[in-house]
Image (cartoon, rainbow, N blue to C red):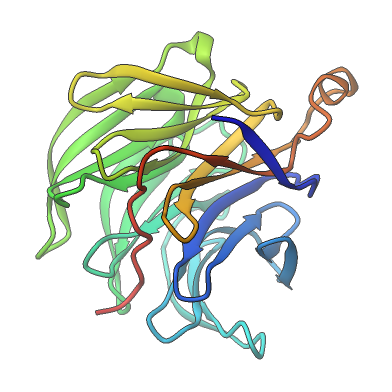
Length: 283
């Protein structure tokens, strides 16, 4: 599997790729530059950090914006805040994803990355319910093919945790470690699933995306990416076999950028598997 550069975006913190099968469009973010991309074009620039986004059934986008949830009409640029979470002003929303029932699960983090003050929330359109707390850096969310298991990454732990997931209520239970990521590989960041039940994890500082069996914790494949700070990944394309990968160049040295000049770019890997679909927000 070869990694192809889609856009040399030089993103400070590229993140949260989301595939829209209706329009065959990849949406993604540069969190720190407050930009929303549609493919290779800038769709919008906003007034605060956006940690993640999701598709809405009405054609709009749902944003995890700083410490709130906001609806964005891509055609008009109109933004409406729907709800907020009560957290320290030093925190912000980081990664997030919709579950198969249309809830938006998002995690928060301390922007200084010093305190484990983050939480994981489930937002149903009216209120945000806290599912976890004492999180360092909320990242990587995905589900098993049968939707009965939820996987979640708190990056500093180097672990992927699995939870029993009740799709009718959105509650999680029975936490256990599914995968431990050796420090030599990098920090686990964004994550997605394929239809074989395996997890694909971007490794920050590892210049790679990795494929794992969550049932055994086994590393199955390593795909090099020419960007040191590989941040997240999602499946898309007409046949759902294209893995789109975001990256960053946050605080990289001149030496690091000389070695990885494409850091901050958007990449594509054509795989031999079918990825899990992107779920939309709303019932």
